[in-house]
Amino acid sequence: MTRELTGFPPAQIKRLIVKVGSALLVAKDGSVRRDWLASLVAELAARRAAGQQIVVVSSGSIALGARRLGLPKGGRATLEDAQAAAAVGQIALSQVWADLLGDHNIAAAQMLVTLGDLEDRRRYLNASATLERLIGLGVVPVVNENDSVATEEIRFGDNDRLAARIGQAARADAVVLLSDIDGLYTANPHSDPEAQLVPQVEKIDGKILAMASAESASGMGSGGMVSKLQAAQIATGAGAHLAITSGRVEAPLAHWQESGRGTLFLASAKRGARKDWLAGRLTVKGQLVVDAGAATALRQGRSLLPAGITATNGRYARGDVIDITGPDGAVIARGLAQYDSQDAERIIGKRSEDVAALLGGTPRAAIVHRDHMVLL
Image 1 (cartoon, rainbow, N blue to C red):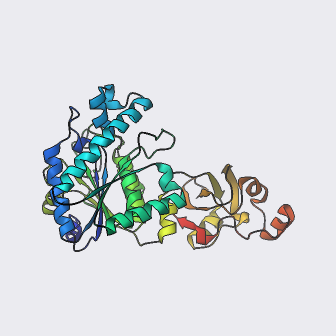
Image 2 (cartoon, rainbow, N blue to C red):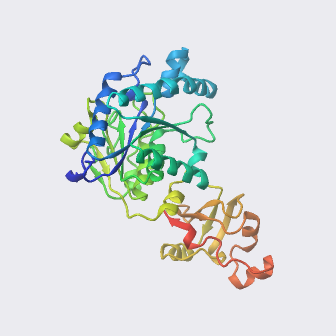
Image 3 (cartoon, rainbow, N blue to C red):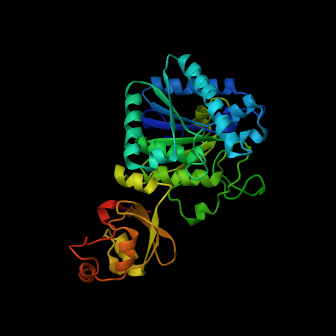
């Protein structure tokens, strides 16, 4: 492992996102693991005193609320149960964080967000501005998904991807996922004794993605290794390092720094805030399929012209986010549509000089302009 990044030291990582999963924060009986959490908060306080800016993404509201309400299956039997449990548990969760941070004379702030808050550009910028102001005031924001109003159709579904998106919005240098597993393995370590821990990943390719398991070891959380790799793609694409390491020990950040045991995903080159937001989106309105020539042109930094498109799928309006896929079906880019789907259907495969005759007036040269597109 790159030793200088192990533990994400304050001297090198100015702004850090720390994600805490439900299985670490909540015991099997539904009570808060307060002693363990106090050890983590002590670490966060020490880092803050050393100049590191901290944002916490904390799970646990559903598990805590389910215990108080006596709900079966940890509050996840039905969507209504999960929403009710979250509404009750979030109060307890925020109070625990406020108390423990307060013991170190640090103010805590609660931020509850939904998928739409980070998928809509204007609301994303609002969330980013709020995070920036809180951090500037010396507050530690504690972020969670607003599970009391989220539905299956409009939710992150796990706090791994939420942590990565918050990392984007906060312009963080790194994200650490404290987990019930100590990193990415070559196979599922619970079922394959030959599985090996992967210490460092420079590029998330098909080989790395094939190592993921969707299983969550605790049965309490909602994410598995698949969601953690998706989070790593979002974070590293935005220029932030991401680490997965075990939280099953006291003072887990110090343990990671001393042992080096975990998986570190190295950041890619920064692309700019708007393109990071596009790349990190979890929902799109439609899809354009392009031929091999257009795929090559996109990778060379060109705009997408109608002539290179072979199909359009979905219903979208001008300005909506759409994916661009190559002939093999793999997504190669994402961008803002310059035409709605009805007009796009009329002009795909056409030369630019023919588009004016089909649509009338002065057409836009590209269906997706390179300035509003990001390669994936």
